[in-house]
Image 1: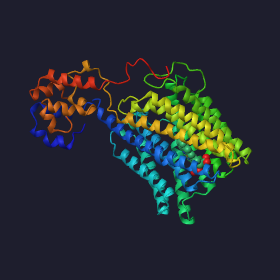
Image 2: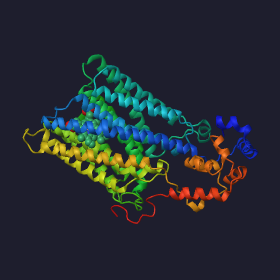
Image 3: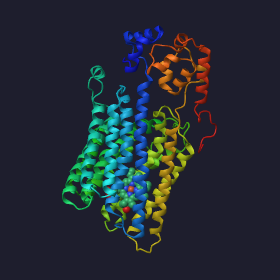
Image 4: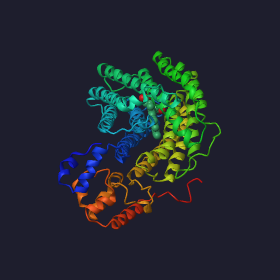
Length: 539
Ligand code: HEM
C-alpha cells in the first residue's frame, strides 16, 4: 500500500489520529477493497468511448454521407473520391469500432483474468497514440498535404498503440502470474479474443506495408483496390468480427439469457477465421467470401443466437426490445456474407459488393454496438445509468430502417440508368442512418456527462465506513466534508484507508451526526434516476 507524495510530506504535521492511521495502513499491509483503480479504469474507458463517438459522428458518418451524396449526384459508383471513401472506412473501423474495442478490452480483460489494473499511465499512452494515429490517417486521406508522412506516421502510431495495449494485457502482475500459472484458456470467448487481437496486429502491419508502398510510388493517398480489399478483410474478418463474436459469448449470452455457447467450437472456429484471412492473400476474394459464409453460419450456430433462450433476458432500465436488434444484427451478418458470395457470382451487378459491405459494417457491427453498448457501457462507467432508453430505441429503429433501404437499393442503383428513381432513395437512407448515429452518440455522450449515481441507500451511510472510501468513490464529498469542518482532509490528497468517518470527525471535533446528515443528503441527491420507474420503453 503506497501513500501519495503529498500525504507523506505532511504526515509529520498531521494530528495524532491521522498519523496513527497512516502508520496502521503501512504496517497492516491488508489489501482493502480500493475504489480508486475502478474509478481510474472508468475514466480511461470514458476517454476511449468519447474518442470513438467523435470518430463515428464526424470523420466517419458525416464523410460517409458526403461520399454517398457525391455518388448519387453523379449517378455513378465511382463518383466520390476514393481517398475520401478509404478515409471514411478507416475512421469507422479503426477510429470508432477500434477505439471502443480497445477501451473495453483494457477495462474488462484484466477483470476476466482475475487481476486489477492499478497503473494507468500506459493505458492513457495507448489512448493518445491510437487516437492520434487514426486521426492523422483520416487527415492524410481528406487533406492530402504532407500525406506521405501522414500515412506512414499514422500507421506507426497505430502499431505502437497496439503493441503497448498487448503489453498491458499479456503481462499481468507477476504475483498473480505466479499464483495462476500459465493455463491455455478453455472458453470460446478467450480464443476468439486471441485470434481477434492477432488479426488486429496483422491488419496494422499490412496497413504499414501499404502506407510505405503508396507513399513511395503513388501521387495520391489512395490504396490500390486489391490491397485495400486485403486490408479490409484483415480488419473486419481478422479483428472486428472475431472480437464481436468473442464478446458476444460473454455479454449476449448473459443479456439474452441464452444457453452457454459451444466452447468446443473454438477448435475449428478459430482456425476457420485464420483461413478466411489468409485466403485473402491469394487475392481470389471469392474463396474468402465462401469461407466467410461457411464460418459465419457455423459461428452463429455455436453462439446459439437464434436458439430459444434458457432464461429471461435482462431488460431492466433499458429499451425492452434490444434483444430483437441483437438477433437482427446477426441476421445482417448472414445477409452480408451471402450477398458477398452472390456479388462474386454475378459481377455485372456492381453494387452488390458495396451492399454486402454495408450489411456487414452498419447492419451487423453498428447494430450490435447500438444494441449492446447502452446495456453494458453505463455500468462500466462508474455504475452510471443509460441517459435515455427512448433515444436508444430511436437509434436502433432508424439504423435498421436506413440500412435496409441502403442495402436493398445500392445493388439496384449502381447498375441502373441515371434517371432511375432508386438513385434518389440512397441519400434518404444516408440521412436516416446519420440521424441514427447522431441519436446514439448523443445518448451515449449524455450518459457519460451524468455524474455517477450512488447505489448506496442514503440511510445506509455509516460512520464506520472509511473516510477514504467516501472521498475516492465520490470526489464531490471531499469538498462537502471539508466545508463541514474536516479541516485535516484539506491538507492531504489521500486520507488513510483505516481511518473511519467517525474517527476523522472526532479528530477535527466535528459532530458525526452532522456529517452523516450531509452525506445522506448527498446520496439522496445522487439516487439512480431510472430505478423504480414503472413504465419502460417498449414494455
Ligand atoms: C452510417 C452511415 C454510413 C454511410 C452513409 C456510409 C457510406 C459509405 C459509402 C458511400 C461508401 C463507399 C462505397 C459504396 O458506395 O458503398 C462506404 C464505404 C465504406 N464504409 Fe461506410 N457508410 C456509413 C457507415 C459506415 C460504418 C458504421 C462503417 C463501419 C463500422 C463503415 C465502413 C465502411 C468501409 C470499411 C467502407 C469501404 C472503404 C474502402 O473502400 O476502403 N461505414 N461507406
